Image (cartoon, rainbow, N blue to C red; front, top):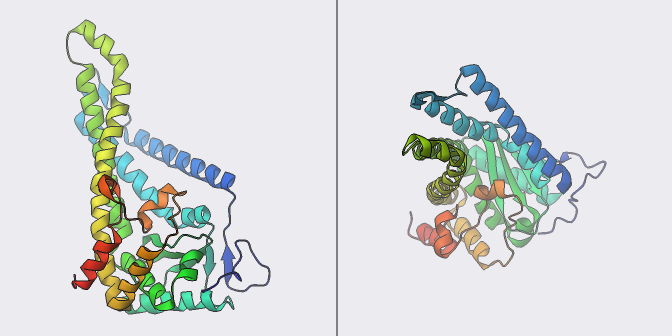
Length: 317
């Protein structure tokens, strides 16, 4: 299939096509401004709750520290979830289609998603296209009622319609399973634990030994905390990656139910045979994309190897 008729920019007079292109510089500024807004929002919330001073003259108030870490971990994750559709549109330069573009491929894409969501008993999500040679699709959004399914032009060019339907069914299943919210909850809990453990251990190290040694250790406390956050963050990412791999098997099974097992298997085989790399320029969207890894990197991969997913479908799992 060919989408040359769908340009990356806006074409006047094309009904039903809304475009969100952003130059790289603006994407970076948008990312920084958004994260700054999240930090400021959480800082204000912590100040209002009186949780911004968990270190006392007698040591750490573990209750205040736990609440501090929970607000930072869960708050940041859920704010990001609420902004996920907006950020995906801007970061990927999505073209939102509504089934009335006049372009056969774009309108077929919308109608197919519409049919799959109706079969799954879901509200209609937004449907978008982004200009990239990668073979990929993703679903995002804060809830089933406010979701987005996006597909790369490379995927539409490289797959036949039954295979694309299998991919779309997989993404619709992610929405039906509430995977975006579940991953946000898990990430928030992991973030909170990383912050809590790194601060408790750093405080214990800085306050060990004699009084004169403690004064010397205080200068190292912040550095120790940052190192521990990196280490625990890596370990935490292995937990979230493992859970993400399990949700992919469930989404494959749901996609097979909605679109047919052969369509789902055919889509995965096409992906396995393709040579186009996955675009990793938007790291924040990595968990949304098809990107199974090999070797020890598999522990950090959000998607299982494609051959394992195909084998699970063929076995009826």
